[in-house]
Length: 100
Image (tube, rainbow, N blue to C red):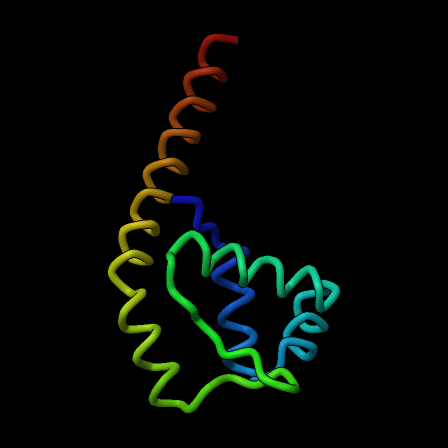
């Protein structure tokens, strides 16, 4: 599973601002780049996280909450895996510094 903080941040910004264009500006990304990140997150989690309508709009608040709740267990698990990876990298960097 390839969930990363950047993709989660893209989704959170889009949800908070209710606009992918505004979220992209906030994150200093192009709107297509932000959309790609959210689509990759959706593919990884195998769940549709936002509704794409004529303009950039999310579904109803209830639908959004239901999707987030459905995705939450996978997101929490991924967060722990990312933390384990970060901890391992820190240990490796510390060990490498000791060997020099």
